Each structure stands twice: as structure tokens, then as C-alpha cells.
Image (cartoon, rainbow, N blue to C red):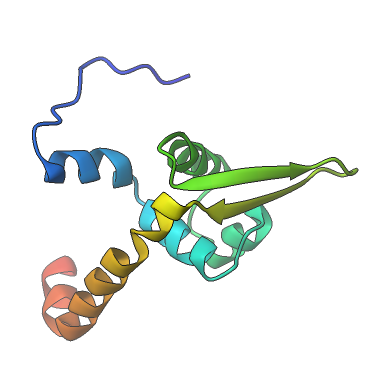
Length: 115
């Protein structure tokens, strides 16, 4: 299990959001769970570049931060579904605004990313 070597600096809102959303796939996971892709296999299909292990780690972190809940159904084979908490739902407008900003500046962003 990963253990922190340094205590995070949480002096402002940007530090806090960085700590909660830091991770390559977390924003996309939240967005796709909001769009009713609830099963781990569905999320894996939506984000094929991510390994199953990394997705599980990031889903566990989102759950630990209270943004999603995990429901395990007592069937064989086990069935797992994720859903946004009320707290997690408050991030969706923020994620939508970031996506809209990126869409509006797509050409410029692509040029600097692909330099």
C-alpha cells in the first residue's frame, strides 16, 4: 500500500482540489460515472488507455474522498457498481466548465501539447 512520505500542503482551495483530483483518470471517471457507466468493466471500456490496476486505485481514492460510493452485490461472480455521492455531484458543473473551456481553446491547447 502506498504511504505518503510528505504531508500535503493544504493551505488553499487549489491545494485541496489538486489533492482530491490529482490522478490522470479521476476527472474522466467522475464524468463517466455521472453518465451512468457504473460497472468497472464499463469504465475500463470508456478509458482503454488506463490499466485496470490504476483505475481501481483511483476509484478507491475517489471513494475515500467521499466523491463516489461502491456497491457490491452478493452474487457470483461478484457485481460492483459505482455511483456519485451528493458531494461528488457538486463537481460535475466544474468538470463541465473545464471541458467547455478546453473545447473553446482546443486548437491552441492541441498545439502546445503536441509541441
